[in-house]
Amino acid sequence: MDPKGVIMTQPQVVVVQPQIRQWQTDLCDCFSDCGVCLCGAFCFQCLGCQVAADMGECCLCGPSMAMRSVYRTKYGIPGSLLNDFMIVFLCPHLSLCQLKRDINRRRELGIF
Image (cartoon, rainbow, N blue to C red; front, side, top):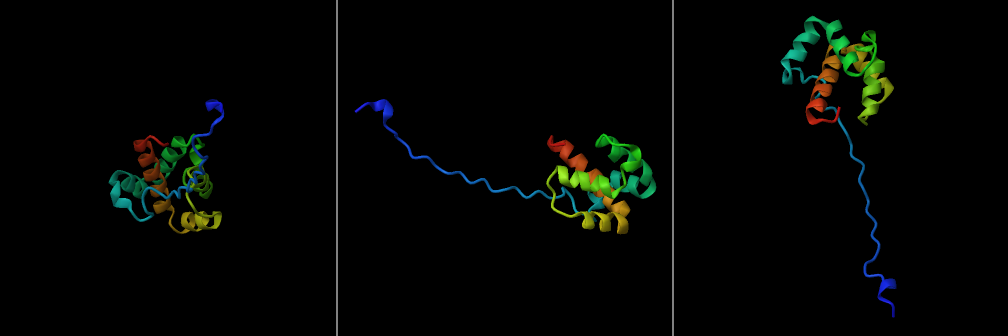
């Protein structure tokens, strides 16, 4: 028998579990980054422009539902358009601060 034609191991199936990604911080976790919290509270439009610049978008897009949805989709964060709309509509400052904190954390981790 030819040793080159003998199979020594069996093929194996590797199942990769999909990784569920989440926001790096909670919506109301403002005090984990006081600089972002203060900027969001006192200069909402400036923070919106920072977020838009981070994402390579127009300055006017920063504090919008579309920006949150694009970001959430890009990083596989679960949610829906309705959920994005409700969060941005009811809690615009918290939403924008969460988005900026998430960008900062992902940048620190090297995944932004």
